[in-house]
Image (cartoon, rainbow, N blue to C red; front, side, top):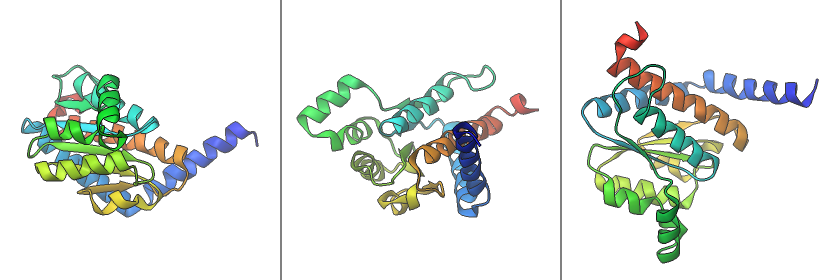
Length: 193
C-alpha cells in the first residue's frame, strides 16, 4: 500500500470513528439546530482558531456570507483573522487576547461563537470563550484530543474522536460543511427540495 493510500485509509478510519461516535453526532445535530435558529432570528456567528483552524474559521464564515451550494441572502458571520488587529492586540496585550478583544467589542447576547481548537487548550480561544460567556453568547466548540479544557466551557462540544491533529482538522471541515448545510436546510429549504 502506498503512503497516499495509507493516508486516505487513515482519514477514512477517523471519519468512520466520528460517524459511529454518538456524542459527536448528537452534539453536531444539536449545534446545527441552535445555530440555524440563531441565524434565522438575526443573530450573528463569529469564528476563531489558530493556524489551520483559523483557515477553517474563515472558510466557515465565507460560506455563510457568500454562498454554499446556491445563491441566497448572506448570513451574519465573521471570522477573526484581521492581521492588523492581531498584531496590535498581541503587541499591546499579548497573543492570548487576540480573539477575546473582538468578542468583547462585537459580541451580543444570543450571538454565537464557533471556537476551533484541535487540542481544546488554545489559550487565546479559551479567552474568547470566556469573553463570549460574559456576553451571553452561545458557544460551539470544534475540538479534538478528548476536548481539553474547552470541552467543559462550551455549550456544544463537538469532539472528534482522534488524537492526530491533521485527522481532527479533516473531520472539522466536514463538520463545518454539515453545519452550513444544516443552516441552509432550515433557512432555505427550497435549495434542498
